[in-house]
Amino acid sequence: MERIQIALEKARARRAEQHAASGSQPTEEAVAAPQPVLAPVPEQPSVSKPAREAKPAPAVQKVQAERPPKPVAKGPAERVGPEVRTRWLALSEFRPDPKLMQRNHIVGFFGGREGGKEAGVVDMMRTRILQEMRKNGWRRLAITSPNPTCGKTTVCLNLAFSLGRQTNQRTVVADLDMRRPGMARLMGMRRSTSFSRVLEGKEDVAENLVRYGENLAFGTNTGPARNPSELLQSVEAAEVLAKIEADYDPTIVLCDMPPMLLADDMLAFATHVDCVLLLAAAETTSIDDLDICERELSAHTNVLGVVLNKCRYTDPSYGYGYY
Ligand SMILES: Nc1ncnc2c1ncn2[C@@H]1O[C@H](COP(=O)(O)OP(=O)(O)O)[C@@H](O)[C@H]1O
Ligand SMILES: [Mg+2]
Image (cartoon, rainbow, N blue to C red; front, side, top):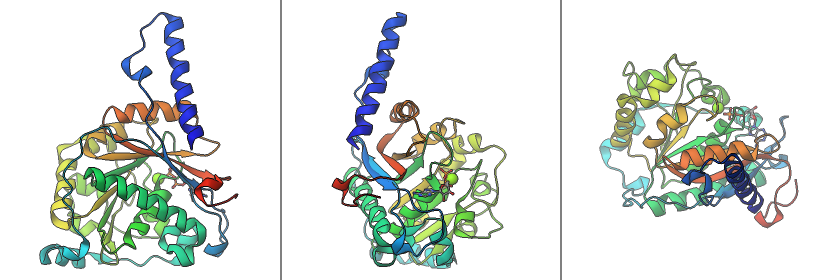
């Protein structure tokens, strides 16, 4: 992952040179030191195979937190108050089809033994993210990428189920890619309510959230929203997130976001989250695009790291050998 870090540095140096050549002053941002990168996730086979034979998932890299830490307030799920517990148990329950999860590369659903090495990669990413978030007292994490189909929803769901296997976590996942919502489809969930309508104040969050087990809940959409950017910037969106935190006391709120370079939805929402994971697809995402996104994001929130998804080859130093 050092190579991504180096490439980001080069992209910045090149941009600074271009500024110098054109006679314009580089902005402070253009010459700022790059943030450190998180860890990596391997490409998984596109055909359905038993999970233990599947190749691992995508890779992450780590970035330093620059903002002041908030006080860590969240306790373990077992210590949740009776009212919060009652609200969790009142949510509709959902049991995904394991075959569909496998087909859609959601290996975090299976865990270490059944999920094989690739579930181990996801768990490792979860642990590193949790460590960083706990250390800083962060609760809201957004996942985005420069372009579409880098695997944001896939990684988000992997992370969600991996977190769900930890009984001391309560995780709420929100599908906020309201231009191309894909979360319900990837999990085979058929619902008649949309999280976008919750943000509009037209539906109740308790009706929209669906739980898996007792500590993992999903807020999904039935289709695209008409005004996603405005919805994400609205006061109501902030209020809905605050209500979810008050009513369900999640230790983590995971937000599956749209890609950054097609619309301003992610930047509009950046101030509502504590940190962001930036996803890159191996052999697809350019370093320049990654660099632009990382710098734009870090002007508004903390960039927790860069995850390299769909890697065909992983670094043996990460312990996953050669794929
Ligand atoms: N690590 C991976 N290995 C193989 N296929 C993947 C991986 N991550 C995502 N995909 C596939 O890439 C496609 C796009 O993934 P998706 O999560 O919907 O992307 P996004 O949310 O960024 O648009 C899907 O078909 C998904 O199954
Ligand atoms: Mg998606």
